[in-house]
Image (cartoon, rainbow, N blue to C red; front, side, top):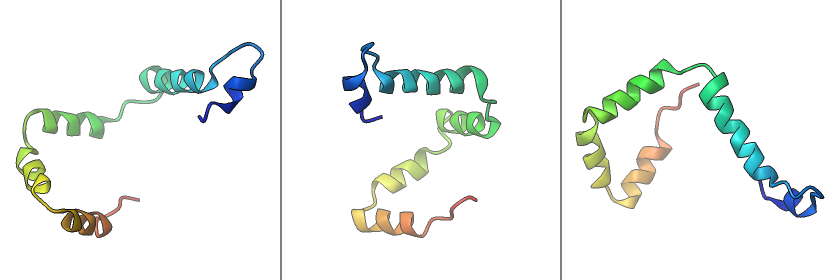
Amino acid sequence: MCGVCSSRCPAGISHPQVAMLARRLNGKYIAPKCQHLADRVEEIASGKCEEAIRANMALDDAAIRELYNTREIEK
C-alpha cells in the first residue's frame, strides 16, 4: 500500500486504490455479515456505552496505558 508500484506501472494504475476498492467490495458484498458487530453498533447508537466512554475520556495518559496493557485479549 506504499504506492511505489504505481510510479512504475506503465498503465498508470494506482494499485493502492485498486486494493482498497477490492477490500471494500469484499466487505460489502462477499464477506459474511458479523451479527456481533451489528449488535455492538446498536448498543453504541442507543447510548448504552456513554457512561463508560465518558469515564475513559476522563482518565490520564498513564491510566489509559495501564488499561490497554492489562486488557483481556480475545483469541
